Amino acid sequence: MTIPNYWSEEWLRDEYVNKGRTKHDIATTEDVGPATIQKYLTRFGIKKRGDDRKYKDEEWLRSQREAGESVRSMAREAGCNHSTIVKYLNEFGID
Image (cartoon, rainbow, N blue to C red; front, side, top):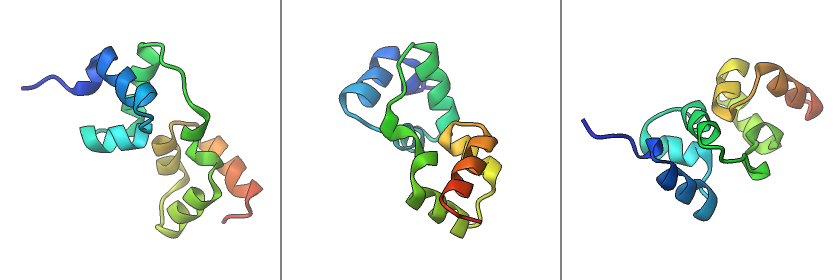
């Protein structure tokens, strides 16, 4: 069994900070959820970037709802609490 790339602080820092990849992009490549990548970012003390906050992206929220995603699954993907998703869905008038 090979060790996942995201277990390496150096690799994760390079991908997230230096290359500017999103948690979602890294998670997809590594075949894990964004929450797993967030866990390792936190463990290594790598700070969140503002552009990584999907829940503030009206287009992303709309596309997720149109695809039938639940609030909880959206929260998992965005790495936030479900109440945060509800707040922004309401703010953008999305059912």
